[in-house]
Length: 343
Image (cartoon, rainbow, N blue to C red; front, side):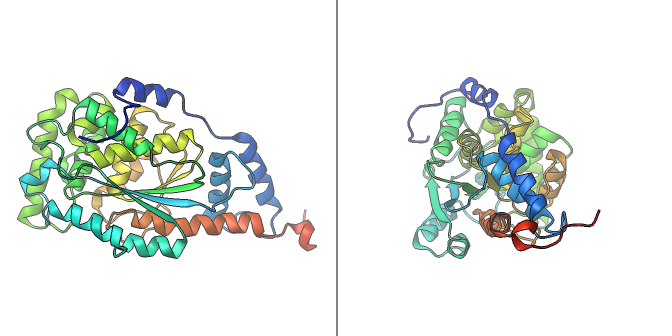
């Protein structure tokens, strides 16, 4: 389905990458922690900004940390499940929104401009949607692995922070199905309004996801099989980008529900896989907060957003930049001739 080179063609190759993930750089983490203790502020006074600066240094494997070249990457794809009437909008909107991104008219364009981030939009065979996962697997193993490889290509040399997001009509149904397959519960725990379905249409969406996961259940013992059976091309690409970022020592900001569901596949396969990722915001999609609790991630922002297109992740770039600016630019007690805490 995806016209890409063939560096990955199987889940076995992806599992091999997972096994080779680098861990945190403890030398950079120590240096950042020691500097934080010397800055002209009470310990902990900047709250999560302090943690963010140390996180960036740890996963960039350098001190001082820098955020000069942030990128927002948005992956766009279509879903066969839209044939079941699970979205308030037709599948054509995916391509139309991609054109809006290109023309500079979307929210993410304005947010990227406001935080000086580079925006890249990756269009994934919009004329070839995934299979309707209510009646068949969304992807073959080869298609899913190639989509992950495509996502890996978004992590280019020179990036120091990446915000990931998506566009794809129908993809909140995929996200809900992934969460149901990975974490159990009932479909109603994971299905939300998405683009705005409500009332009987929302119940229909819940029923579709419930039946679909039950249909595939015998094949869902492995997280990557979950991704290929009920996921989407853009979700697979996000998972690939997360892997490539880890290998390239690039910290990652994850967007909302759909993006976090894609990431959750990796964590289900390896508990270390998301250590270099922070969830940028808590979506108003009701399943997102539940998912965050289960994967142990605390969002940076909680603004009632549910737009997708990496909007929340891009907005969070500003917070990370502020954290790094404070860490690198503030004077130490010694430099400012300010007395430290009394013994």
